Image (cartoon, rainbow, N blue to C red; front, side, top):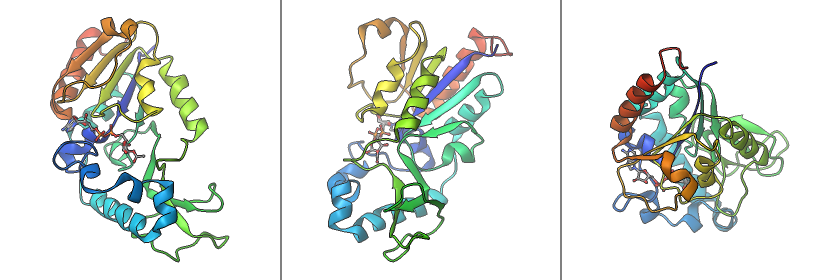
Length: 241
Ligand code: OAD
């Protein structure tokens, strides 16, 4: 049986592709935009154009960037292991680098959905504007989970169920500040290995029972992923067992 590996990723895994993170001190998006105005359900009710402009800019930006080495190494792991990627990112770069088993906890930039019927979801490549409507005639909105909204309970449960069975958890480029996503790394088996790849100091609580299995690789995603990839190749044989 191949070992099971969970990747839990955040904005930092795409930073080397040229996508800004949210909370980094200088160019973090949330230093330059108000979460409340552009990424909350209240902001949407207040000023839809402002919200659409923000996500149109993100969608455009994501078209002009490419997956980086970290995304590629993550995709390469599935040659040897049973890999699931649970990402908070909406940029689509995991799929573009070849990962196929990807759960998007916070939505996807290249999809939009009806404001009236959330099951009406469409692929969307270009700008989304006021007046763009679903087949039932309601305004479309970005397929993104905003502050003030709950995650899709089925997706969250699926992510939790998968996490509870993995042997190795690799967390890449997330500040672990946003819940409930940030609980996932602690939901593995009692002795699952947990690698945390992030160049910053840790500013979150590590449960005491997880500390013996927790390793902080204080590097950017590409370098950190290379280290972890090589370590997994040494720990488990080339068949992933
Ligand atoms: P954050 O911006 O909160 O955290 C990004 C993390 O990436 C930080 O810990 C950085 O130290 C790290 N980082 C920066 N450059 C890196 C690099 N080259 N390699 C590896 N790590 C690097 O982003 P998230 O944790 O993803 O939600 O944020 C979680 C959620 O908050 C997002 O999904 C988004 C946001 O509000 C929604 O919009 C719903």
